[in-house]
Amino acid sequence: MKRSIIDDQRTNAVHLSAEELQRYSRHLIMPEVTADGQRRLKAARVLCIGAGGLGSPAALYLAAAGVGTIGIVDFDDVDLSNLQRQILHGTKDVGRGKVESAQDRLRDINPEIDIELHQCRFSSENASGIVSKYDVVVDGSDNFATRYLSNDVCVFEQKPNVYGSVFRFEGQTTVFAPHLGGPCYRCLFPEPPPPESVPNCAQAGVLGVLPGIIGILQAIETVKLIVGIGEPLIGRLLHFDALKVKLRELNLRRDPQCPVCGENPTIFAPIDYDQFCGTGALETVPSISVHELKQKTDAHEPFDLIDVREPFEYEIARIDGAKLIPLGEIGDRVDELQRGEPIVVHCHSGQRSAQAVRLLQQQGFSNVYNLDGGIDAWSDQIDPNVPKY
Ligand SMILES: [Zn+2]
Image (cartoon, rainbow, N blue to C red; front, top):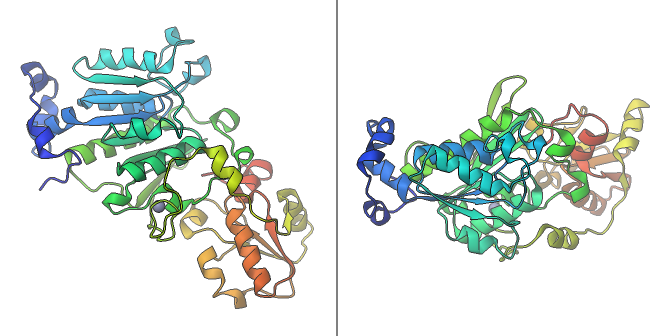
C-alpha cells in the first residue's frame, strides 16, 4: 500500500521515456520503487530553501534521483568561503547568483528535470505563494528567521517540511508534518531566540563535510515521502555527532498548546522574525548573566540551578550541575526546590525560564533569577563545549 504524498492521478499522467527508463534503471528494478515510484518522483515538485551547505547535497541527489521539478530559493551570491561545503557551486561560480550556479550544475546532472529559480529573500510576503506550488519543502536555511517562516508556512499549506540544521560538528534532521501526525518546529521551540544570541555558520564554524550527511538524509526523507516507502522521520529527530560518530534518535511530541498547529493557534499568517521578536517581549524578571552564573559556580556559592527545558534538549546539551524540571512540571514539583537558597532558572534562550521565574514568584519564592540568554549564551560566552542546537 502506497502512502505517497503524490496522488495517483498526477502519477498516472506522467510517462517515462526510453532514456529515462535507462537513467533510472537502478530504481526501477527495486520492487519498493518500480516505474510507479519513478513516475511519482517525476510528478513531484520539491522546494529547496537555500542553495547552501544543506541544499547542495539535497538538490544534487534529488535531481539525480529524477525529482521532476526542483525549486530553489536563495537571494545570495556564491562566496569563496562557501565552497568548503556548498558543493553545488564551483570556483568559477564565485560572484554569481547561487540559484543560477545551482541551475547549471543540476542541469548537467539531469537535463530531464525542470528547475525553478526564486532569486529572492524568502519572506512573509512571498513565502505562501512559493510554498503552495510545491509538494514538499527541504529546509536548508541557516537562520532562525527563515526556519520559523518555513515551518509556519508549511503548517498553513499542509506541506511536509524536511528540516535540517548543522552547527560545528553536529547536525540534526526530522520531518515536520502536523497534517501527517507529527509535531512542527514550534511545538518544540514556540519562540525564536533573540537574534543577537544566535551565532551562524559564519560566526561559529561548521565542518565542511557535515552538511553532506544531513542534506543527504533530508534528500532520503524527501524521496521516501514521494515514493511512499519506509518509515518517515515524522515525530523523530536524528541527531548526528560527527566527532563521536554517534547517531541518536529522539522522539518528538506534538504540543497541543503550539501557537501554529495546536488546538488554539495564535499565529494564522506568515510573520517575519523581527515582527514576532518585537511582540515577544516579556515583562522583566530578576535575572543574572552567564558570567555572573560562572562566578557563583567558581566561588562555590550555594544556589540551585534549574533547567526548565524538555528532556530531549537536556540530552543534546546541559550545564553541569543543572537539575532538569521541564516548564510544564515545575508547578507540581516546587517541593523539590529549597526555599532558603537562591534559585537560578535557565532554558534554551531565556524565555521559558522567565515564565518559570514568574511561576515560582507566584508560589512564594523570592530569591529566584532568570539566566539571561539561557544555555545558548552559556555556550557562546562561557563553555563552547556545550553543544548548540
Ligand atoms: Zn506545532
